[in-house]
Image 1 (cartoon, one colour):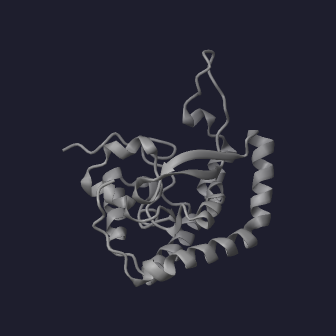
Image 2 (cartoon, rainbow, N blue to C red):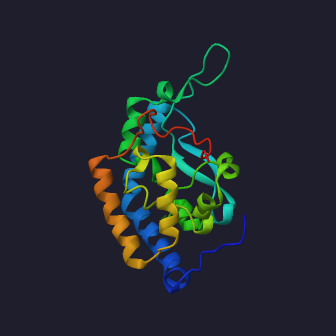
Length: 211
């Protein structure tokens, strides 16, 4: 990654990480019964493993292992290839995604320091070489459990709009701003807004921004 242009303020340097840890710890304690029931249902309805693990780029592009509850089956065609997402994503899996229950294991990523409560969502490693210089700035802060783009369209907006919102967040990280995003996230999840794009059950593949 190129040298950062982002300069962390007092909140980021001395408060945000501790706040993340305490919030994630409290959430794990309070939501442990929900996580236990969800894990059991995932095991019964979708099989094993219950936890989906995938490498994602974090702060400065450093790769870490993201944890989520699995939402898809392992159904394959006659040649052994996985079927399309829309086939493997069951009604139960859609419910997990629409309520964001599938993302609860990411609380452990926050405890480990891989992620923050608020920040740009961690995307796929294969997207790294596709970002332009502006878009790559989303990695100047820790990725988030939720983010500015998630409360302004989530998967229903274009990649370019999403990345612009991510960079806008990077340039304006504040205590008040983070808590506004957290409260807006609760509203977005309850209303189940922006779960899908117009052409995909989640979000279509990012193939780079055309000049």
